[in-house]
Image (cartoon, rainbow, N blue to C red):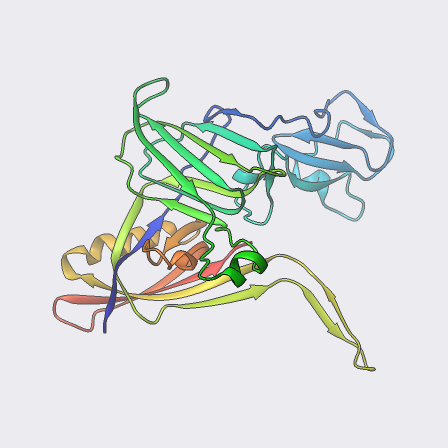
Length: 309
């Protein structure tokens, strides 16, 4: 088996708390905050609680906290959870929901140890990353990322082909500090910046990626064909599944097993390769794995990713 001269890595994202989001240029003013003593009589009224937007479903809605599951379930629920606010959409673990800002969107975060940053479902021209060794400390890392990946080879392509922009980026060469201050700025020359997800933490090396990685895009759209042969399509988000194989040195096998065990029920970023041209092999989702002890000094890891939207 030949390898990609790359490593199969796993990024288990740090948890972002309210205090950890130091600042954002996107305000949280989508709707008014929920007030416990207020009676909500108008069906369709919307409020914010714990960075989620809730829609009122009944008249005479008094004292029913929308953040409690019991008030959103049953035959006649009081509230409907519409998802994260615009400010927090990029942190809600759902890649399809985007935070939409102006021409520039800047977030400053403190989440614990950080060596890698991954962001996806991006609509921006440039991204700038800056890391300080501590809050208000010394800058230890900067990177400017041009999201334009267009490859123009002749005049026909220059005049008639559209621009091809990357929709994700990975930064994985940051010196690890205990609690650095991370600033990420997305910029777009025309229109609004949009960001689906932003994750950071430390990557764990699982082994050498082998050729034969497979990607399987999967749609959540509804496609139905009636008895007359007429097909109707209701478009919804898509996800991408991935299956990869890696060789693991025997000395690293126990650690690799522990890392996979720790990540089984946590949405992670699986990095099949960090080489240019292999950006599609960076997938967000839930992992499962098997380890084959088939050789004396090498273990064969088969890792599957159930992609999340």
